[in-house]
Amino acid sequence: MLLLMPWACIVVVIAALLWYQGTVILSKDNMEVHKTYKRHYALVTGGTDDVFWSSVYESAYAVAAEHDVLLERFGYDLAVKYSKDDLLEMAIEAGVDGIIVEGDEDERTIELINRAVSQNIPVVTILSDCSGSMRQSYVGVNNYDIGQNYGEAIAKLIGETPSSKLNVRVILESKEADVAQNLVLLGVRENLEKYYGEGSIDVTSGTISEPDDFAVEEYMRDTFLDRAQLPEFIVCLNSITTQQAYQAAVDYNAVGSCKILGYYDSESILSAVSKGIISSTLSVDTEQLGRYAVENLNDYIETGYTNGYNAVDMKMIDREKAAEILEQRKEQ
Image (cartoon, rainbow, N blue to C red):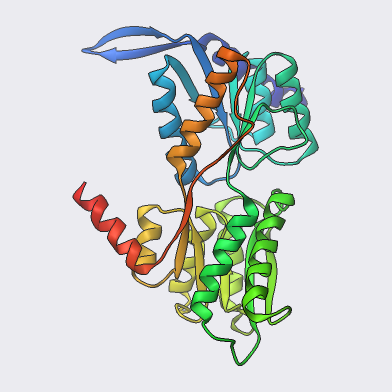
């Protein structure tokens, strides 16, 4: 009987979503107003990178609303935590009109995306692709180019050829340590080899076992406590890892001992860059991510065609630029 309970919970959630589909109850002057949309899309993401994905969702939601489409962030703020694949399956069972999902090359994810497409639910992968699937479109960044950007930023910090061998550690997540993140690692390595020659800079990877705050915090604590093994550079590939890295550097008095290259441009991360705690951070245009994903779904549903790939803008933000952006946001 106990084994049936998780699935019972899922059935209840799906039933609620089916009832919810296409209709929202809004409150205005203490009166209920029913709003019906012509289509219902689901945004499905994994991990704990809420700051980043909240920004993507805000952009996508606004674009969807302009086209009379309801975009729901599946699984957000639920009492029960479901995996990305569980949420993807729920979206399929709820019969949504389109799905935007953070892709990966996992066989289960490929299977679920193919099931959705076979049930006439178009799928757009976002940020990370699922190239082995039947998805209609991918919106994101070139992972090799991300690595090249990080490599370029590290080379600027190193300057001329160092007198001793330096270590660059790229932090990966075990579930996502696939082709995408390996391409980032390759981009970093090849860019530094261009400047300093093969083998002159030791580029390695560190893997976090579980994509949650506690596991990331524990990994960073162990990294900064072991000063003998502390690398000269740490490269973070999401905002959670970035935040935990700079917090550990502050907590264990290691600011300057290890240069941190971050990911995303939240106010807290930009503040750390402007103070020199983080050397620089990679900003991916979340507005473009959300907008292109919704527009591609709309195009496919309305015409049967869409762009197979949309690249979004990205840039490295250094200390001076971070202070400038923070001042601009303060004025706004």
